[in-house]
Image (cartoon, rainbow, N blue to C red; front, side):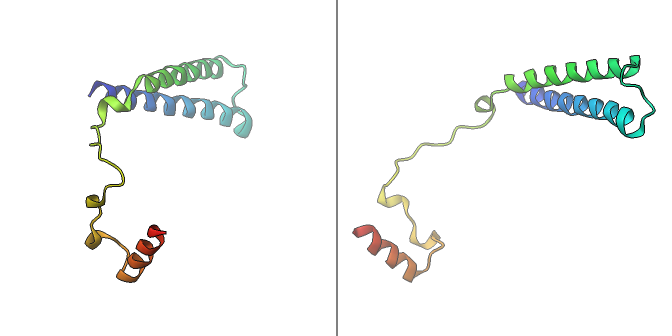
Length: 103
């Protein structure tokens, strides 16, 4: 549960950091009402970059193997695993496949 929370917070911090950088760039270059060297722009860029770094570290610490259940292992190539009734192939295609497999 703690890993999922860390992943959620990390992803949110990445998103907030990207929005912060985008906001400063939009105000500075598109609207032109915020000088790129102004204190608010510099502080926002520094905080946004910090949020991105922390968010990336939180996401990297998340190990999906610890949260997801293990898949059961099964032997590949065993004949009893195949169920012809569950196959999406029709009878003709199944016979063609069996002929090709016997070669």
